[in-house]
Length: 90
Image 1 (cartoon, helix red, strand yellow):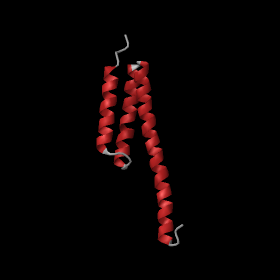
Image 2: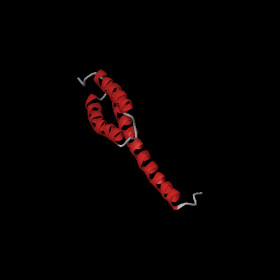
Image 3: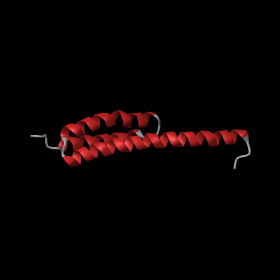
Image 4: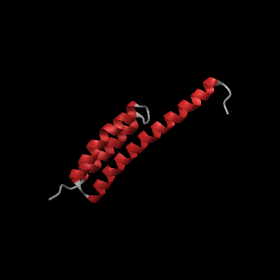
């Protein structure tokens, strides 16, 4: 346990930051899951809507330093390709 005031403050900051980052990561995973579920169901309009909602969430994670830019670029590229591969509803 920390005995110095600055170390105690750092612990408090770390706890807050960890909770915030965990929530951000959870939002990203949820957004990705929604796109993947829509693709699996073969629902192209829903998949496109979910992808459109997921993009800013992923970019925000990059801006906040939760994920790296190349990771998000790779995920978005793969999600876009999977959405594009879904047959349009006839």
